[in-house]
Image (cartoon, rainbow, N blue to C red; front, side):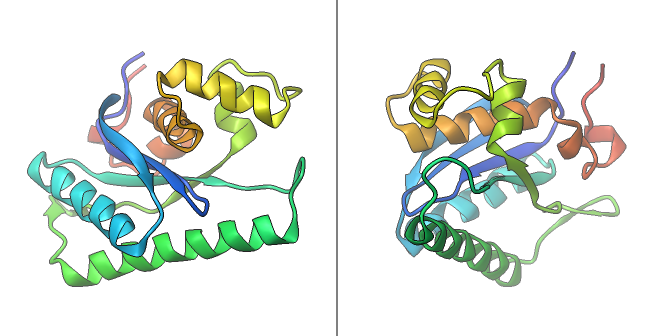
Amino acid sequence: MQPNSAIILAIDPGKRSGWCLSDSGARIRSGHAAAIGELRDVVVSAIGHAEAQPAPLVIVAERWSQHGRWTAAAQAGTSAQWGRWLAVIEEAKAAFVIPRIGRMDLIRPIVRVDSNVWYRALGGSTRDKREERLAYAMRRSGTDDPDEACARCIAEWATFAPEVDAVLPRAFRRSS
């Protein structure tokens, strides 16, 4: 199965967010960001890469759910950081003249994915505890940073996910 031909910006939102930028399944770069300026740099870089290809940019972010030790403080912090990502994305859309590829917008709708979905699709078990999931993600992605590892795994999942294909024009969807 071939990957889709999109530029993927995968985000594991949190106080210290992991992110991964990939192009047709190949990782370009990844890291973590916390400050608003770092988030802005990541989004601007992703838009610039998509514009240079040209290829559609799909932002794929983990959707959190209340499982495990999910405190009100953790939920508030994660929600606040996701809100910062959304603000930076909207700011970037307003600041740039976002090019079009044919009749489509370069930036596609945001796709959200539950951690169980990407984890299970990449071979993990839903019975694994949080620590086991993070260790698996770090082994699979080749980094010892858990936030970056999750973002890399989200990007890997997104390359073949029907949910991402659904927001892409036909010419950029994966072929089976």
